[in-house]
Image (cartoon, rainbow, N blue to C red):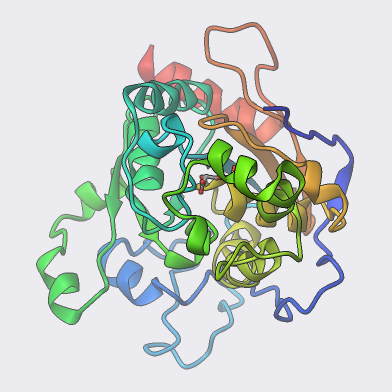
Length: 325
Ligand SMILES: O=C(O)[C@H](O)COP(=O)(O)O
């Protein structure tokens, strides 16, 4: 499937709709922060602010003595690899199905493409196909850090999954699974064959259900409804991390990512209807000066192509080369 790529630097203005007012927090997000404060606290150093827990530290602003980690951050988006229901051409939505063997290979290939790009935090949906994609991709990353899914579903889940070694935590990457990043809920189409559905309701009607912004499938979510949870989550929990200088990988779904790309690329509800995302193909954005600049799909480490998209990424790759030499 074709992917719309626009090289224009994009402002992070919201598309004209009733998205939740965004706020640019300077400090990192406060959603899993209690967890990260316990599990993966980043040691406060002269250049790094600790992960602030608004509960533990009344003031939510970063103390003046701390600077942002960086003025630039990488954002990688990956639609999960092919799933068993993609292979059967069934509407999937929020049904939790795993990857096919091909989908596993796609996830590993995606990992090769991003293996030289820094990742400090991983966000996935709560669905296994996105989580499998993230974990498989990270097996190829040259940083060799271990992605660890954070569990905050209960106090016991938090305490029972605690890591009691600072050194081990430093060699780990927090993975936050958020239902808000789930695929759009396809309502009464879930489980139906896409071709048979088009024969029954007409190609035009099915295309509208699949790709339009405002029109929901029967008893399902429109892309707009999906955006109102996915983009709101992105603004409230992911964008502050990027603003702080943390590099983020999001492994999610065709439509939840289409809604986020619509926000990043400032696409209109008309333009987004032609946005298609291939399974397992990573997309790179650079976040700098509060703007998202799309950089296309990174090539693999052995393929001819751009060595690194920015000076900071070139330095990161250089450091990996030296460490792994
Ligand atoms: O949910 C599904 O069926 C797929 O992941 C996406 O389907 P679509 O390409 O028909 O939106």
